[in-house]
Length: 222
Image 1 (cartoon, helix red, strand yellow):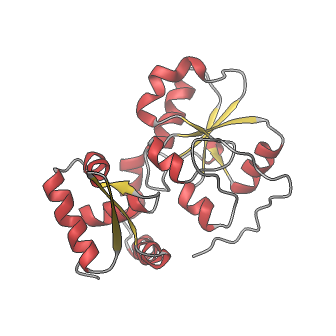
Image 2 (image 1 turned 60 degrees about the horizontal axis):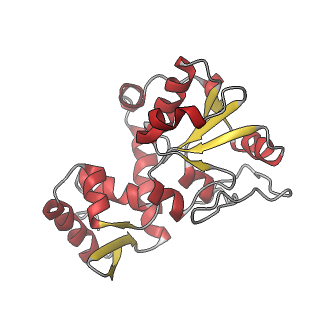
Image 3 (image 1 turned 90 degrees about the vertical axis):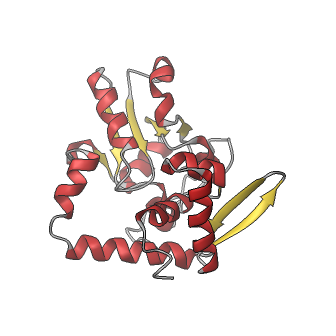
């Protein structure tokens, strides 16, 4: 298993599959690799028991074999965060500078959603939104933002979220919206962390609603 996870591309695939099931074609497009290379990486992960596949027509879909696979990746990530002194600088260089005044915590987001006081944007690809999203969120993939800007309210607060702490989509969206005078913030971390915290999740194309009695306990499931 360690050998199967020993390349950056395979870690990237595992991180993507933590968002939900994806076809080989979609994975190849996301990681910028050929179908042949992506299939090779997936076979290695499958042989190690880290991913499972199913066929639907001419497409093959992959998913993580179990929640333990995601936990294995998270343990590796947490170890790097704790042990690599240069990591904060690398994160800032990749994601951009962090401003805590532009970050929304889980409890605050829950309260805002329950009172209908914000517009919540899921800026991941639509396939990931369908596989699971925060109830009340609107799907607005990062790459479609400029085309759909006219549909975004300009007189209220916008909160965006994406794949997690190393995803550039939400920070970039927040910077883009703020440059146009729109009050925007991003959710701390992303959807996988929200899900692991035991908070409400919706599926499919419907936005769904946050239950009125939902609350954040401050504990993240791992």
